[in-house]
Image 1 (cartoon, rainbow, N blue to C red):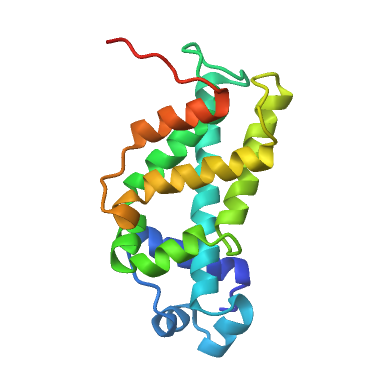
Image 2: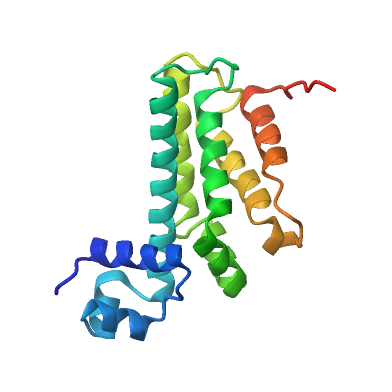
Length: 198
């Protein structure tokens, strides 16, 4: 077996998804390579975990987009008036929050997890922001909405606000409130708070 860097990252993502700690010695042994080969191909443990976490994030966002396409087709808003990008982001956060393996990683290594997930110069957050830019750009181009600020700034705010809610148990000892996150993100994107029936 001679795994590529992509194979190694995908395998690490599977370990995280299953709730298995990625110990580089055991991980390299399972792959049939030395630790030095592992390091040469993907960097140190934090590099590997960052790439694996982004892989899981990208996969989740792509699956959420496919769900919209399956259920709604190519429309920009569903019958309830929800914007495509907001629905996809809501599904994305919901799946991540429900992932037992991802939550275990946050619980077992909270300081490392938050550093990897929220580092503005790391392997996760900048790419997640870029993916959100592309997600929103599609709705802008298809006539779904006109943002009040540039997409880069808007998506930076979206991702940071989403992180605050998604990781609130680790960051602030608060139970994640994904419904509140969706309401606030909807207001941020569309410039208005949706009314609720009392």
